[in-house]
Amino acid sequence: MSSLKEDLFILPHQDKYIVYSPLRSAVFSANNAAKIIIEKYIADKELSEEEKRTKVYNYIHQLEEINVAGSNRNQSKNKFSHLTIIPTQMCNLSCSYCFAKESRSNDVLDKEKLKVVIDYVFDNDQIMSHNKRFFSFIGGGEPLLCWNLFVWTVEYIENKAKEKSLSINISVVTNTTLLDDERAFFLKDHNIKVTISFDIIPEVQNEQRSFANKNNDSFEIVNRNIKKYMSYGIFTRIRSTITDLNVDLMPQMVSFVKENYPNINRLAFEPVNEDCKVSDNFYNKFIDKYFVAKNYGQNNNIKITNSIDDSLSDIKNSFCPVQLCITPTGDIVSCHRVSSDKDTNFELFHYGNVNKNVNISEEDFNKVIKTNHTKQKECASCFAKWHCAGGCSASRVLLSKKQQEAYCSFVVLFLKKILAERFLKKEVNL
Image (cartoon, rainbow, N blue to C red; front, top):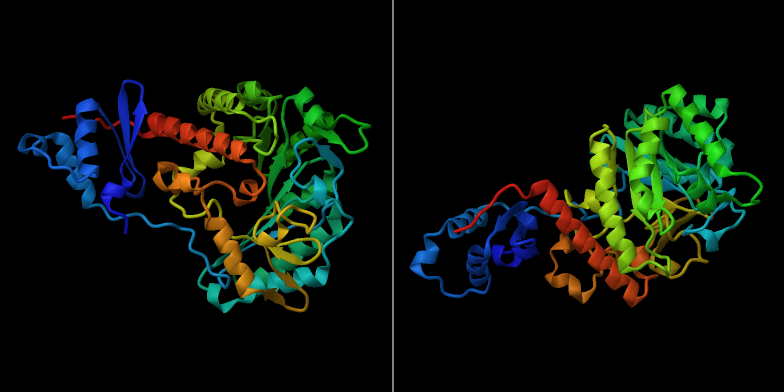
């Protein structure tokens, strides 16, 4: 259990200070006099009788009585209820920032291997206490290039769920270029949640998410297909990658969605962070424009979010839980972003395979856990460690030291701004 002294962080903010206790979910502002008392408390220095009679001293002792929040990321290899499926590494787009561009192959996941791993998720007695199973189709490549396999898998999952009397949630992340009426009806009829990878502004979409053959503009096709989704009442959200090309355009992106896709009320904006050009200047612009976009979205019933924003409501010891993710070759990996032996440090994320059975290596699984929980030494004294948990482990092994430092500074500034805007309503001075 972490003592309150280890769980109080004093963050300068304008002419005052944000005082934050992550594990106790407490945030308040303090003036300089109150800050001095808090610092003495943290350092175990003697406080005067007058200081002990202050409002801030009394409040600190109230915080000591709060039960400490625990992490929700303790994970056993026997308790997977969520399967991530990468059906293929093939893709019809050639996105400038694609994390899987070095992993391209013509491999397609074998049905028998899929059946084995789906059965594993449904049949494992140790997770039968959970009455819901989750299945996500994602890249690698473009999942809907393997449409027949996709249909077969969805129907197999549904039949298995009926047999086991369990509920299911099926989702897909797609570039939305391959939609037709038949596919739209299928997604609708099977209640599949759709996330669209789309950069919204026409010239940005065409520049960053062009077709592999360069023959057509992707924007017009995706734009038409999003409207088809809406006409069929398919649940969709948009996920956009933010680069130097569109970092200043985030407010316009929200406005474009409002005007053109009125049924879409959730946008995720994620900064690219493996581009060698990413800098402090890019991250600072991202923070500024993100909050302008977020405020505009709130006024128009559109939720703007990203993984860092979401993380503040979570206490965790790793950036994300270990995934049960099956690749096109039948390998099991902990992160869908590292899905091929062509990927850098594949061995850090690979912990099993599927043949006639699901084969998980205890040694490799523990290695994955260690990779997930590894943090930089600077994390030890940083309040953000309970939310970002040291950042994405896949990104950490790819980023240079300079890139990691820029990203960490960005996360701290971002979270501090969220604390100030969302929670800083309580003021505790003398």
